[in-house]
Length: 586
Image 1 (cartoon, one colour):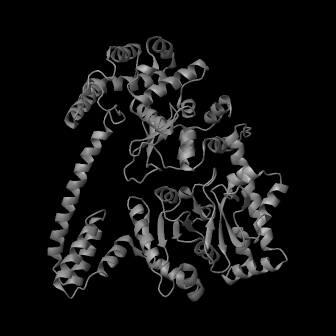
Image 2: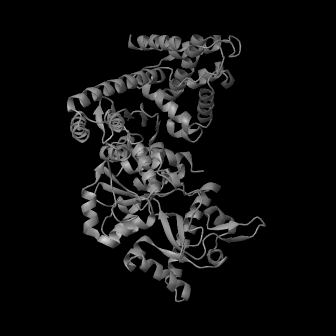
Image 3: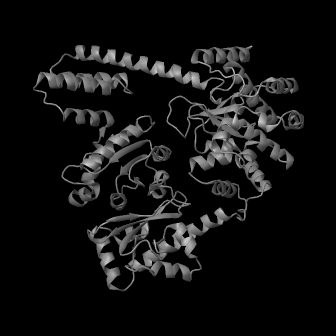
């Protein structure tokens, strides 16, 4: 493990406000800073940075922690890589990794780098296989420069070529298996995972090779084989070519369905083309894109699968702050084919005339109905009104209501009346949901009581005391000895707070301050998020010795959780939260 002293120094040299400020536009607000959360889509800031505790917390999505947690989450890195990133940022020498997982991760990255080099060398070898592979890439219209830029290669049709090559470089079979470069058969024999295929390496944002995609030269099955998930590759969080696209000054990104489409676009000069790794776009990939893009154009294949992918992607981007458009490709099945047929300029013309998400969805609905039939017109109007009543600006509603009136020969006034009714209905539905959410966001939002414990109000009081006690010991470690004398960890009603208490005691025994940095390596991420939430809520709250004594008394005087079996209903919960809020305001 990395020595705690080293981690403390890394955190000390990387002020959280400066680090977060390089990703998020922060505004100074008293003793804290606030901005739009980079981990979920929002229009009203709910993300806060607290310089005094060197922590952050988002009241919208619940993400929180220290500067290492922030870098880990925003760059999709593991803990060790996050520490290295911050160490490099501060100009510190990198720590020596002596943990087994860290060493294996480093070896996997080295294997991938060597494998990419091997595939590229095999592509340029002087033999019949290599010539066929080069002919394939050139047949797809790729220049030698593009092949070099993307590190494209070829895996020879041999069961052991890669394995023997990597062994000669000092790598073991177990390390190769961990990288997904070789596989083990049911009989226990190992063999190369990629054979007789043209190869496309996948890079992370730091330029490390993390995976590969392989395609046969002909039409044999399976046509595509991709690396499995490994210590360094999580397909739901990876974007192909984002390492290149992020260097562009253009904030309009083009989201494609396949690697070849991306490569063709980059060669044609569209340097913000990217593709999702995996079979479908994920919420993590959308979040990653929103860090770099102001606009995303969906550019999927024109077949049925591509249209379904477009619909799924529009749903994922619905709550995103980026502008989303949809590109329709006439007379071509995919962007690669269109560029080859009609050229770069015509493709750029298409990009500049893309339909927004509203128009795309209306066109899809329009295709379902025959507007010469009155019944179809009624259903068409209903569906379009549903589209226009949700997440659409008043100006857009007015414009599209006018178009709908002309298209269906129905008065605009009648359509606007129906539309206004639908908007109000949506607002009421959202308000009801907001009220439900507020119940979860109150003082006890992070109190998850065991089923059928004690009297509801009493249990919540004890749980609140446990949380406040944990906060008190983190903010003022001098309280720890007194608390330790009176309270055993097994007396905690809330399991996560009991674990936090044990972690605080562990820090104290080792002479380490129980801050978020120290607790992050001892507790699950969910518990760290909760502690960050508690610290955020108590940022301006002073907790003294009398408060600590009161918390201890409340916990000590409570009966064991199994004695008074009763549940608290929603109204009781709401009343209790209101009492706590009123006490806080006094």
